[in-house]
Image (cartoon, rainbow, N blue to C red; front, side):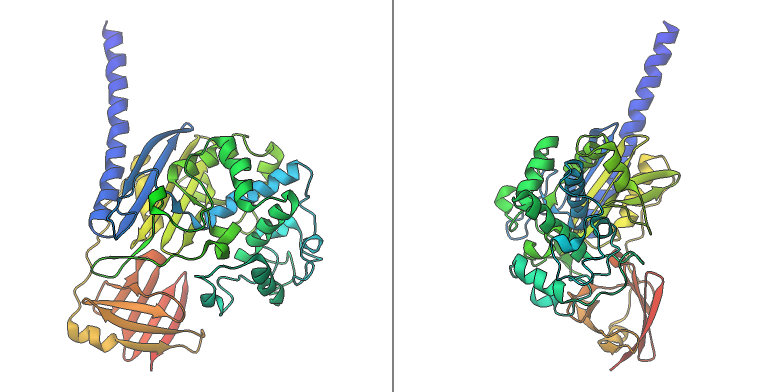
Length: 436
């Protein structure tokens, strides 16, 4: 009887420990939501089973419709993992080879006769990114981009480097891969997504939407203006296409990665190919470390959606988040979630900004230019908070950490103001701007 009692108590303590970690995760996300730092959904997979699934915030502003775990949100570049999976399925079906040249499909692209399918998957082509390298892209974000038009732009780019000589992330690579999937199968990308992945895994909330439909439980993204959330204008999905236009849920993302890594979508050899990392990038996969653990997955961002999904092969655990209200660093959110899940120390972040006087704020308002990079940054004030807006981009709020230092945590941006100058720091780089 004593032995049975001990076993019962041990089992009960394990249940409480499980419940406690999920309560801490829920408290963290509620804390960030309450402080206007986050809206979105989180899912946790344990031993290939969903054990936590919750949503926080709004799906649509005008109706006040709230998110739920089944609300579909855009996942940005996690789409690339779906695209890479379809390409590897075609390789398994012997309809394509990793050594197949791009010239077989699109010979007018620069160096097409030297670029292979493998190089497209690994971002080693030298093809410029239509989204980040093309200064005219702002003209095309909100309108339909027909295949012929986007191809014409890509074919007009000059190669940035010799194919396979280096890595440079380019959305152009994955849109080309999506077109190749369509060319080989004679079916649309959406049809391939549905038959090759969604139906095979029984995913319930993953699609390739033409536009966001709240009536179909699809949600918009939002920007915080310093006072309230504002709905972000929707891009036309034809631009992001196979590089970033899928809508899904964290639950489905976890089930997708679980299916991929458990042999339900591609052969073992093809999965090994996808996991092969060159210059920090595999074939549609990246590695995200947490302590000694290694998660395979991807991140994504489009409009003001931010997403991340990763799967640990040893534990068969997965974590997926899709953020549609982005006012805090996504990586920091995931560090908090993983820390609580794995029993690591973690302190809730300080979300209260430093109070800067109206006089000082007024001194910083203006347009700044730099000799180092060909963009201008306009600093403005809205509802008592400074905002920054780079040429051709949306404005974003700045949070003061001192009288001269401001941050935009979402993108890891720091701005330091002094004597008509502004130093911008991001990703280990530093640029000096002068007020005009």
